[in-house]
Amino acid sequence: MSEALKFVAAAALNRAAGLALRPSRVVDEGWHALITDTKAYADLCRLLGRFVHHVPETPATKEHDPAAVARTLNAIREAGHEPDEYLWSLEAQSAVLVSADCMHSECTDGGSACAAPPSQV
Image (cartoon, rainbow, N blue to C red; front, side, top):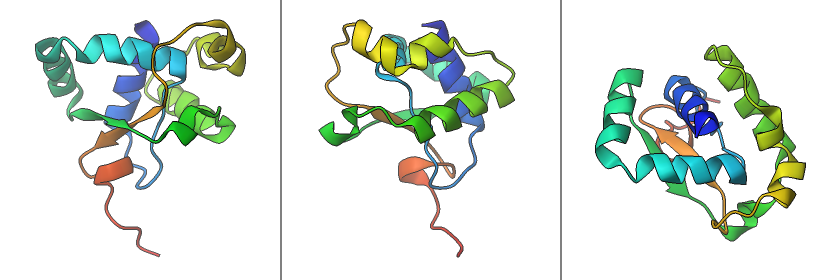
């Protein structure tokens, strides 16, 4: 759960258009637990300054993506938190039974993932 809180805090600060942060499958379980208390989750997001939507992705995202993990861990550190790297590792993904059969990304209004503005190339 603590890693899910760190993830949501980092996602609320994420302004990198098109570069969604992604929890590990283990951390995603904590995020699921957090968002089921919708009032507490909405209050948390309000305190963080933006609502972080939970966006289910295709089953192809079950694969461990080292670039997404590194990007997310860096964002967590930039948000002032120290991640428990084991819970983000491929080892933990293999060792810990999780119920989700896919990964999920954060989505913030004007930030990354589904709400991201088009790239200005």
